[in-house]
Amino acid sequence: MEYPFDFIEECISEALESIPKNKKPNIAALAREYRVLESRLRTRYKGRGTRVNYGGYNKTLSDAQELAVYGFLERMESTGIYAREHMFEGAANFVLKSNHTDPSTLFLTVGKTWAARFKKPG
Image (cartoon, rainbow, N blue to C red):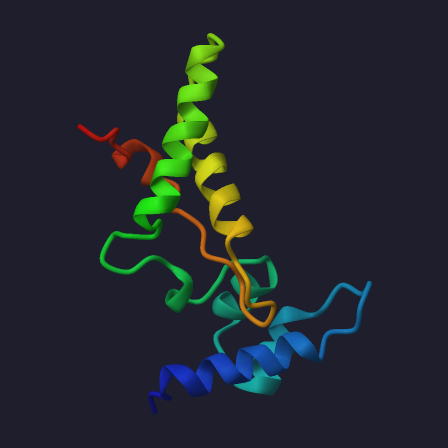
């Protein structure tokens, strides 16, 4: 039987909350107990967000956030440091984390291939 996305996410959240601090969990046992996929629970435990947290229509950054990333990269280039893709990704994730205000949710991040698709304006 296929369960709704919200129900599965609620079960995963409960499973993660049941893990004692400073203790390595048995992810497989937790997955069986809460009836969720082990792989999904493991990736959430390692910090990956839900699919709700991943962009949407290829637009993770707002226009203002993109301008902040452009400004950061231009300052780097003006000092003679030419950014690599991982620097683009780090700058974008920093902007996203800085603008995140809801402590009950994870902040959005850009994907691994985002930097390769990132284009300067004009």
